[in-house]
Length: 282
Image 1: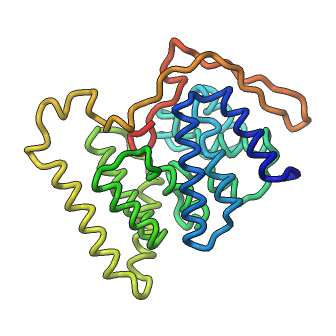
Image 2: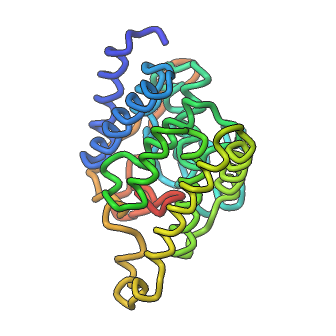
């Protein structure tokens, strides 16, 4: 990448401070720290985990039209859900920004950034770590289901991935949001791997039942009062969108090295700040 990790980190943090709100920056820093902790726990490259965690939300506040345009220019195959919910593309576009703006060439880091929202069947341990850190960093909340998932990610990355996908699917169905097929493909791939892995099948079944039971309790009739179903409660408070941020100008370097300006954020259009992703979270 041409720069020492600390120098690159300083550069990324400076860019983020100008292009995302403080609340998002704090989320990013928590993801970075959790990714480092999970990499240490699972004997993965700590530097790669830190960089991927730090850069996972580079495109979080790009406008939907910009996300679509950049994805199309990159030649990405788009699902109809991507086209109707372009915010889901911020992960793939973030990898483009990491490569073009910050010179990241490591394919494992770029894949971890690109797959942090929807996951991917067969994704690497590093990608699993960033996927899980983004979903489960402490700022996401302190409810029982999330704490069970946090325990699972410290024990077994593959198990934790399909469990997080299960939790995500329940959140999306509860709030009647579109579901990207890749979440289902990711869930099925990791569940199959976990179910056939020697020595883990019983553990996966037991822990999975624990999460399912806790989620079912949340969705029991006593928990589905009219106030629970009102719009402000379709997602937990910690999953609500960030506050608007001042207009800023995003500048990328073209392949030839000349600056290319991205359109400024539209303060009058909340969609330009980023919609919720697969978890109904910001």
